[in-house]
Every structure is written in C-alpha cells, then in structure tokens.
Image (tube, rainbow, N blue to C red; front, top):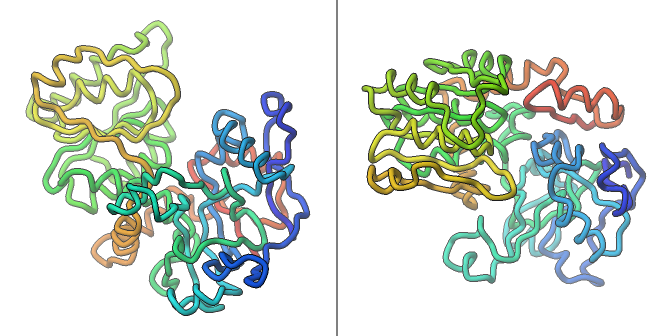
Length: 387
C-alpha cells in the first residue's frame, strides 16, 4: 500500500526536510500469531489532518528522539506519519467486535495517544498523561496510509450525517482547544488568546461556544488575526515584529496595557498561551487580572524565565498546563459542540480555517512534496483526502 513516511536515515535528520510517499506492507490482523490483534481494527482512512507536530517533523524541528528511537526499537527504516483520522473500519478483531461492538463499515476517528491502561495515571482516570503512552504517527505507525491498524480502545464513533467529513477528520486537534477551554469556567468571562495559529483559532471558537463574553486575539501575523476576526473575536492586537522593540523574555507591556484597558482596567479573567513563546507567556500573565487564570498549551523546549514571579503569588493568579485530550470526556464535548445547532462551529472551521477546501484539501494519491510544503506553510490546517 501507499503511505506517507519519514524514511530518512537517522544520521540525515538534521540535513533533510519533508516526507515521502512510499510502498509499504499493509497492516493485517492475525490473532493466531498475535493475540493482541483481537483488540484492534484495520481502518481505511477517508480524510486525515496534517498537524502542527507533523509540520515539526517535516521541517525536523521536534520529535527527533521519539521518532528515531521508536523506529530503531522496531527495527524499521521508516515511520508512517499522521494521527488525525477519519476512517472506515474494514476489519475488526474478535474482542473489538464483542467488547466494543465495532464492525466493518463503522466510521471512526481516533485518540492519538495510545494509553497503556495499567499505569497509575490510567487507573485513576488520567489516561491522557499515561506513563507509558505511544503517539500515533510518531512513536508508532500512523494514518497517512491507505490502511492503518489501531487499538479499538482508541477509536471514537463519528456520525457523518451530523459532522461534515473534512471537519470530522480534525476532531483530535479541536479536542486540544476543548480541553484547554474546559480547565476553567468560561461563562461570561473575558478571554485573551495569545497565538492565533490552528489551536488558537480553535480556542477562539470553543471559548465562544462555552460562553466567553469577550475574546481578544493576539498574534504577530496579519493573516492569523484576519482569521481570528472572521471567527468572531471582539478585538485583535498585533504583536510587533520589529527586532528593536522585542525585549527577550520580558512582557510586552503595550499589549498588556491595551488588554487591561478593554477589561475593567484590570485584565482578562482567562489568558490562553498557545504560542510557545517565553515573551508571550509573560505577557499573558501580565494581562491577566488578580485572581485570574492562565492556560498553558504552547510548547517549546528549553528553559523559560518568569518575570515578576512574586506577582503571580501576590495577585493569586493560577496557571494550568494542558496536554492532549481527556479520554474520552473531551471527545464527547467536542463532538457535541460540532453537532450542536446552537452555533456554527463546524461551518466556521470549514469556511475560515479550512478556507472552504481551497488549497487546503489535497488528494492523498496525488501527493506532491513541493506543492504540499507550500500549502503547510501558507494555511493553518491541511487535510488529505483518500479515495
């Protein structure tokens, strides 16, 4: 079968980019040889989403050790990438059928973190921070392929009569925003979103659906802020890209002052740091009122500096880190939001974030590395369509 893989030799990681369309063996269920296959399903992808982490792999910015070490452990020269899936089950193991009720023809999405089910976190209901998890498309083979084998426990049924398929394929990253927005009560709250990339844009939509009264989008990019406006933010603030005005890790006091002015001269109730920037984090903290909350989702490696640390304590500000999605509580909320008739969440995702499919949806079989790279650097979200 055809699959989009990272087959670069380990020693060439730092000198290459991209992924390659290659012929690889089809996955199969063989319960006689491997009893664990009874718990799995073979799925034919219909649509798959290209994630920010996939982009990081494409440009070799992240996941080097996780991906290469897992390939080496399996004795493989390639890793099939991709973890945002909408697909049709074509074969189900015996336990998958008897316990989960899966059968050929069922339409499913998938949680991307394969949790072990036996560690302390899994046993107490925190499977999203499993001690021994695998990530589909990074530390185990993913869904950028004509078929993928996944554990039945990871799958989430999807109703295509209520959710359009292009949007159903990206429930997983939408779940990141739902998880972030679920950390605190947003009803009637003022909110600032620092970083209006894909998850930041999703956060704007979800925050509004969850009752936020005022939403301010903050980003250095004009196109990101234009999309934030199209999604319905109340105000946008553009971060300066002038290197003479960027002061390292210190907060952008001009941005913080403008936010305070729009929020009772105190600051927002909730700030979402979605960019991974040290300066953005400190600006988010400075922009949050006393007693407010800062949600941390943006990711970057290395050390961070917190400026005016004592003020976090003295003004009673709370910081919450968010990773992944709660399994499957977050999925339940996300799918209900998409299916709700009370707002136009999925329409806005398709019309604005996916640009109604123009230059954002690509046929998998016609994959072209040059055109695809142009697309992933021009749009916040790209989707692959399968025949």
